[in-house]
Image (cartoon, rainbow, N blue to C red; front, side, top):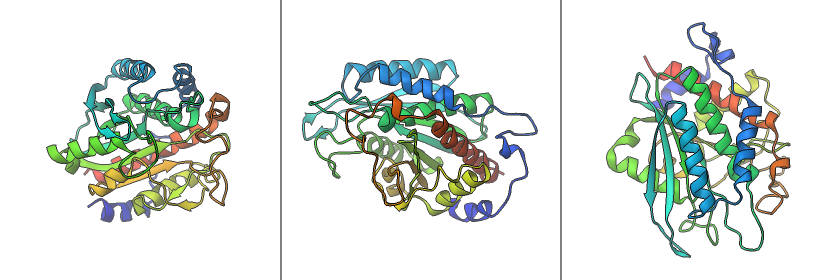
Length: 306
């Protein structure tokens, strides 16, 4: 079980190139915050990206092209959930890089932006930052693959179309996990890391209390080792996000989210407003999160496979 194995790995200092994210003494690519920032810029230039929009389709086409260039096999998962606005066509994008094992590590982020009629919502942090981090992690792990098979999931419909609740949120992640449960693929997933709102200039990553406890510990251990403890000093807080369907299916999952920017748990003032723009995002914040997640996956990959 992952729980028992993680209890071992969390207590071990791995004296390998996990310090720099490499295997077998070979220097590995490191996550670049500047590259990720440019991916945020590209998304913001497309405008609002709610489910069913033209911009949402352009985003998927761009992601598919980038990921296929990196050697990932990319599939679209189309579905039409019932929503408070009626049936809405949504599309998850799932990219896979096979490893030596068919066991999987999953990275996920929501690609949609919340729908607003009264103003233009660009979602630079809430939406684009997580997608940008995943795309840069795809480059890193393509350069030096994991032994696990790596799956990147870009969810549609994370945001509520009218008002957040169990029947109006998390459409894409719920559909994806349900499909994996039905096919048996869920049993092959060792862990899932969900990234959301990870670009704020004053980023404080939440210690999300619903997440798998050993993954929470691992994340902060790696952050401390890499010198990013300040970025990961957010409050303990429960957040409803795309990790919940994974947890409900019995898959160890971690929500890496900067939902609050203060110890009191106050969300950024620009959250879900027209001010969630490119100037709110920092390459250094993206880099701190990206390199910490990179190190976590390397450490899990080395420990979980024989």
